[in-house]
Length: 87
Image (cartoon, rainbow, N blue to C red; front, top):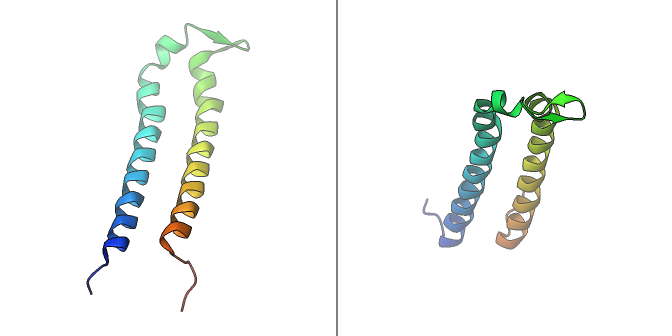
């Protein structure tokens, strides 16, 4: 079965979106974690900033990443005529 150019473009954009969001997730989780000790020298609302970033900020960032993925994929699905309906 040969894929149409439209289908290939849809999946290429899907993979680019997924890769970009995974890169943001990686930076927010692991790279920021690498600098936690330096962040803890600063204070936010009475807590060390490193603690606050990982206890609250990372959870908010994960929700934002999920929200972006859902919104962009819904838009792409409409644009490329992709349906989740089963035949």
